[in-house]
Image (cartoon, rainbow, N blue to C red; front, side, top):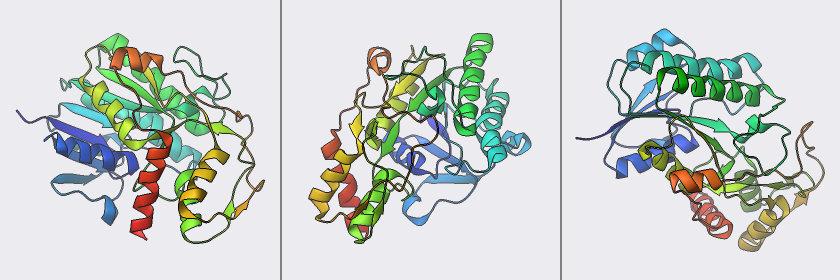
Length: 300
């Protein structure tokens, strides 16, 4: 029988790539977002529904249908509106549990964030209690704690994945790598930090692999997994790779400051995902960046 998956946030960067992968698996795909997908992220044979998951009564109508899997990628990139961020990431997770707790789901994937660790020492381990400073990290951490309790109390089949810096084709130009690539392609100045801080960057295909493996795993329920390459990379290294490929780079260093409490080196320990999910990052940084740059070059 054909599997059916509901993707909350299916019109976003990760949601698009997840929906595309699920189509290849011949799964029936339903996407729920607050708005229609942009043209280059609209997929054939994916049913798109408009719904704000922070409003339970609207979500309840969608939950009347039977699904095998639900993946919660919902939320907002812009965290300036604190109330909306809190509602989307925490109240939204609560509402999803309430409408699906008796639906006999095989798997529910809650997408967390590395921001949940806050100023915790790296490499981050899943058993560390996070101390996030911003509303986004706090809301994500509240959602993770809530979902773990739902597993303990109700055996709700949830798995929590904490992604680090995902990148790849069709990402909006509001993140470091696509902003950098766009600046080089358009021969514009690239306003940046010192570039000496290190972050963990993961190619989107490897992130989608982690979601699929979590869905299928019998041993992932009730657990939290860090999903990243497990290797920190200096931002300046990425800049150099992009400059070499695109033959242009006009940086303006020091204009962007680190957020208060933001660590200079941030990356995860991913041994738990390797052990239980049998997952690993297979795309090298150079290969992933080349694929991403080729996409933006052809797009322009």
